[in-house]
Image (cartoon, rainbow, N blue to C red; front, side):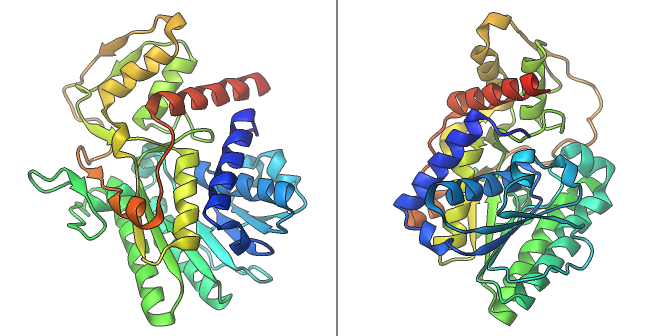
Length: 355
């Protein structure tokens, strides 16, 4: 991902939000480890903290942990306050120096990878989370944030519309290899709770649903990625289903604001992150994206296969309730589907020019 005007605007907006919520002083002079720092969520944390240093001289030391440093933007690699840590989280982590906060984002997010590499996906969220928690305990860290997933909820009960943090939870078939992602996240959450209980570690968990924006791959197999790929390549959108499955979509800067709030200003363990106001069907999402680029005259086409597609999300319904984070922490997302995806497309066009 390349640093663009959109990312610059987003990071400034995140910082303004954090300033209004009195979070900045908690970060000044701290050392923060971000795992999965080349991914969408991880890189946004790094970009934001770099911008914090530029605007407020916050003296934040950033440790950006990645398996492949080549995937990091030069904007990140060249920054004086960023230390690139090349490591695989499924191996024990030996990192020198103080670490005040750990933000654990490292995990495959692509359904294609979850299907083709279910073992590696599970290990990243089980062994990887264990290793980062052990590191936080050994460093006596002030806080640990685990980026979990809406998928821990599985399928809702009959008649259930919303998932809340206090359950019901966990209707996931463990014998489906693709569900190694959900099962791994559930195990990671249990470890966060256990380290909090046994060792007093200040752990926090967020369960986001369908975060999108600059930094997302348009080749990872999620429907929003497929649709953006079509839009960018001037292709009609072809649906392999009736498009009736319901999702919520949250723009990346709104999600990062929520995660900073949970890490630095929350009293409870776990919070959902989503936007019920952006609840939409897959078909409606496709139609909305087509409308963002009317000059391309793209169409929505249905081509439903007789056999079930492999690698797709096995959960079809269930919306996250974000009443808890809204009421307790005062979080309210800014971007709707049209404005958020418009920003995403603008960033993708910038990246295309930079290639």
